[in-house]
Image 1 (cartoon, rainbow, N blue to C red):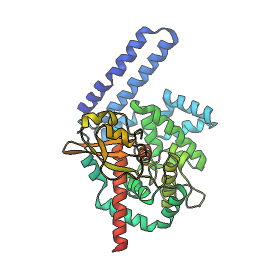
Image 2: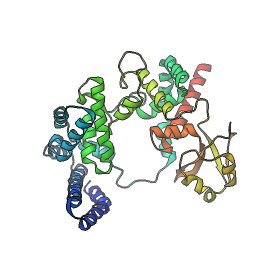
Image 3: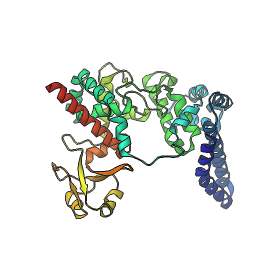
Image 4: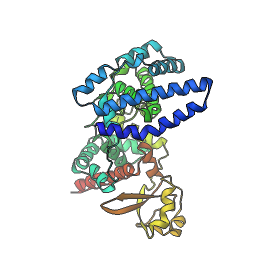
Length: 379
């Protein structure tokens, strides 16, 4: 762990050096502000390294000596800004932050591996296409068939895609996470410099969600990254996309499969899902070097079949329509790279989790569940 902490400090050192150089060039208020930024950065980095280096009970001891978030300058500034912007009670925000705990396990969970292995689509796919998720998906579909049919009709999102996302995210509610969301988000907001801005926004959304629900802000539980319920929505996504699909007057993503189903369908629909359109089809690539420009263009669907053909790319199965697509490469060190044409609906799945591996795993799991369900129904 100590070696991992050293690596982290080395990785973030350029940021510190750039800030130091900027301080040397500045004068007056800007210089003071940059010094404050550097001080906050170094303080956060020290806490960050502690989370990596301290084992077992020593982590608890280190956490107990950390000032409460309500007593830290950044915590006070957060409470003041949020209260002013959203008409919340600053004293109540500070009281909640005083109860929030620094969670070393959250920092450890979010860190990349010390020695990351090469990305492998074969290994990634195997994590999610297993008997547990496929059988569980068939059972979940059977238990919630009417709700899934309703969501498909209202939002245009196929039932198997909804079930596939819930399977990848939490195995249909088996793995919801056990962290207090308030403490997890506070830890990441104030003690994880690389993504502090994102998690401070989500922490603010959590306070607003608690206000919307009229519940204590400390009552939410979820993943180490602050995601909640069967579909693992962050607080901002709950407020923006979640729906009360069982009609009981409360959105309960952790206890209501209907709310989870409707909310996933709502999310995909609002991100541009095209009802009845293809998601992805396998492709053949004659010369990967010629096709490199297509891959480098990203996963947003931008090309027609003629564009692909000019660079030696062709569908491996018939394309239903000549809709815009992106060339998706799924690389594995231990196997040949798979190529797919990803359409608008594939891109929409990546809005849920911005990874082509993730979107393809959802698509493959959804397909496997649908085929197994059809086999069981026809058997």
